Length: 371
Ligand code: PEP
Ligand code: MN
Image (cartoon, rainbow, N blue to C red; front, top):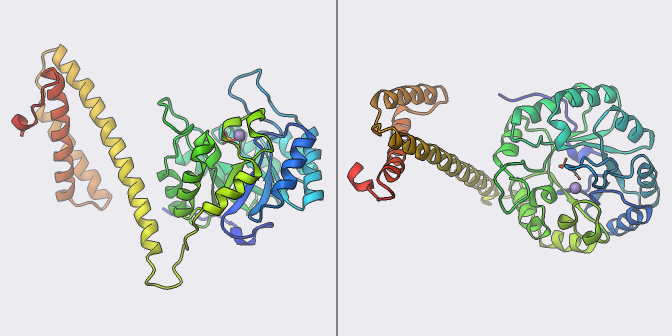
């Protein structure tokens, strides 16, 4: 079901220069000189609309750099005066909101470790009541779309209409090449549920390493995200936080030059841009389906091991009958035909049996015999 929120279209936001709405700047403000130099160079990058910098840094472990605090807000105010760029910072509690507003910060973002907590988001929302400022809500660290939507709704309730979401990927126990798993299906689902909500991608925190920034940015643009948040620093290798994922302003320019911007709406109906975007979404869902099937097979293998150890047969027909009845009923409620569900689940079940068989028969490939 679609959710209705009072959102100002991003094209009407202050600082908007076109797609991608680009937010850039260092992960953390470290010194006045680092902030000013980065901002002066970024002011020469045509696409940059907003300068970002963390003042209060949520760090995973103590004894790492936790930000310069309120002092840094003066530097951000100076960036605004000297370069004309709008400025934004992360707020994680009521005090941060009051301090940031006192220094004229134009945009606030709620970080992933904050949007996960409804108490804190509500505290921030209360502090924002009646204030006219731009607010971006990063996805929570865990892939829970309801929690993300809940945080957005809480901020909307404070009367914030220049409101958007930032997709920064999700933590997981399994380590992949990226720092955070993109789980693209979540921002796609968010767009489906709240179509008017601007969505910005944060490739820096998804990637964790600068080599992946271009491919993630391109994917976000191809999925028709409204903008990008990319961390940049005059000397990334010596940054006090997130050194591996930051770009110099020159590298940022180069990334932007390589970015292909496809039209979200074809000017000529013969252009297949819409189809292209939908196919991208299909690809995302297909990857997702494969991941889910893989996970299901892992569970089937564990079951196979258990049955082997306890000398139980693989096929438990009552259980299988229950599964089929349940999935057909649930499929019907989702508008899926019983025939399709029957075919899909029989194939999945067959594959599960094959996996269990392999475990039982010590790695022998017995697929043919089972069929
Ligand atoms: C950041 O933007 O530097 C940051 C801490 O982000 P996140 O909340 O996405 O980890
Ligand atoms: Mn960072």
